[in-house]
Structure formats: C-alpha cells, structure tokens
Image (cartoon, rainbow, N blue to C red; front, side):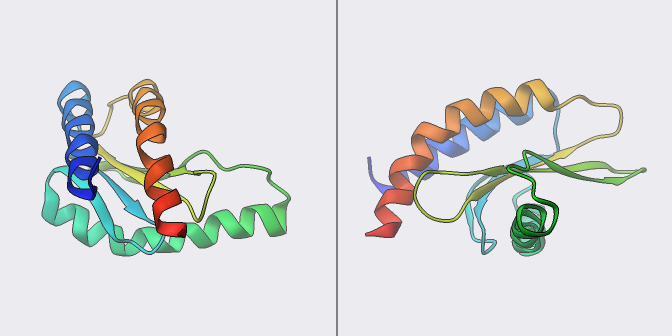
Amino acid sequence: MSGQGISNHITALLEATTALGGYTNAFVCTHDGLVVAAAGDVDAAEQTAAVVSLFDDVLVRARRDLAFSAVDEVTLLEPRHGWMVIRPLKVSAGPPFFLVVRVPPNTRWRRNTNILLKRLMPILEPLASDAET
C-alpha cells in the first residue's frame, strides 16, 4: 500500500472513531509531531501535534526515572473543553507514533481508543519498518 493509501486508511479509521465517540478530533502523529492522518478539526490537530513531541520525553523519563516498563496513556483535562488523550503506539521498529483524541467533557474514550489501537498497529508496523530502511 502506498504512503497515501496508508494515510487514507488511517484517516478512515479515525473518522469512524470520532463519529462513534462524538470526539472533537483524532489524529496519529510521529514522535516529532508530524501528523500522519487526522479526522475532525484538522487545524486543531496541527496545533496539538506540536505539543505531542513533549510526550515522547514523558515516555522516556517514565521508563528511565520511574522504572515504568510501559506508559499506555497520558491525559490532560481542561474542564470546559474536555480531555486530550495521548496514547503512544509503540511499533517494533523505530520511535513510537502517538494517537491523540480530543474528548468532550463527560465522554468515555477508553474502549473506543483500545479498538482503534488494535486496528492501527498492523497498518503502522510496515510504515515504521519502511522509515527505518
């Protein structure tokens, strides 16, 4: 599948999840904050992705300083606007990707993001492998 085809496939999964959960937006980005695919408010995704690179440092520090073997989610709450949920997508090769979902107040996300992660991982594995070579 071409890079554009992969991006379109990821976008379709993100669109389905945002519609199902009523989320503001969802996107997948690299650890550097480069957006791979987005659904919902795409302008907000671009702005938020710049912040996500900081969460790569959170992962490194949690492992190094706190001896955490894994971090599966970081959430930020802004009471009026809801949650920013950041889930690292650790692929076997290379640095992680991140799934970011903006969730309105009083809305659940865990089940939907778990399902989305399971669907994204087989798509992202070859993408990470291609980036390594």
